Image 1 (cartoon, rainbow, N blue to C red):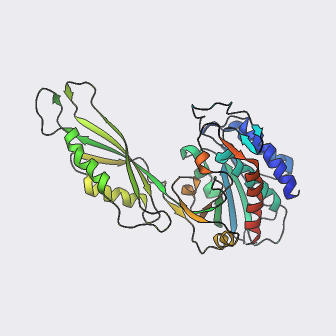
Image 2 (image 1 turned 135 degrees about the vertical axis):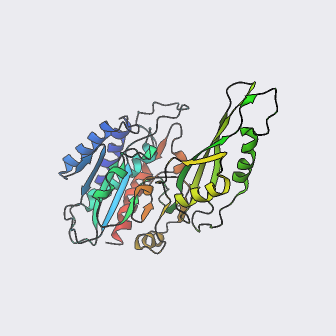
Image 3 (image 1 turned 30 degrees about the vertical axis):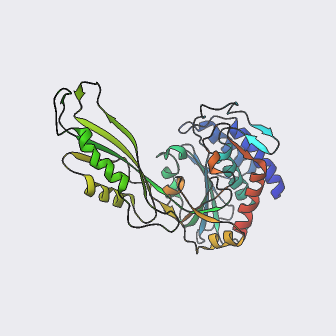
Length: 356
């Protein structure tokens, strides 16, 4: 098929995906649609849970591999929607619908790109296409559950809306639950050992501390206290106060390092720090990597992304890139421009041809 034919097919397929509910952990129906897409093209594929992957026709175990990945799950619709989120409505150049921008446009563009290269022989790289599940919740049954199937992967392109610029680094995520203990009692009496008072120096530390290493692409590590909870009635001094802290970690640190620094600074017999997970580390690719250089030669900008994606589950260098705009993700009346999809397919193909 020509690029024009693949593009027309991709846009129609995206409409079908939009019309099919695929909340995280509920992607069964879109997984079937993706299976049908492979079947119609005569492309063998594998499936585990709601994750699907396929190899190019002339896959050679001795060659390095490029992984093309995006997700087919969506968040639940924003409460401010004024449209039916499952109606794939075209108005001018805009295609409206839940998941159109995040990340349906990227997914169908990468699938079209894979189809374009599928039957080509004598390429320098193999290709794997992997439409996966549970990206929106960083779920264990998403790409993390199949990544060990991908061997000899030199780099990955992760399809997320970046206005087709190159996100060559991405912040990781570390969520901390902090319990601050003290003496419970009656509000009519004075207690020096109150959890609320004990929390003040902890909050002050999070407000003022800055990690010394600064990333060239991602800047500083960012810590934000996002939740505080204590007490159940007005006349009782609580025995415990709980904080939740959201840490956005750069490529200068591993999540465990961040945890150890925080725990050493504020941890005590009164302050207990626990991490929900250490697995969502920062990811990046060298600015000197051939695919990055190829993108720069095409006039693309490079930047560090503050948002999390399935890059965090990959062990290979990875580049985040795709049609659409990240600021539209999770918004009410989500949309993507049809022209962005057309340009996305063209750009993916041109970028990869430069290194093949």
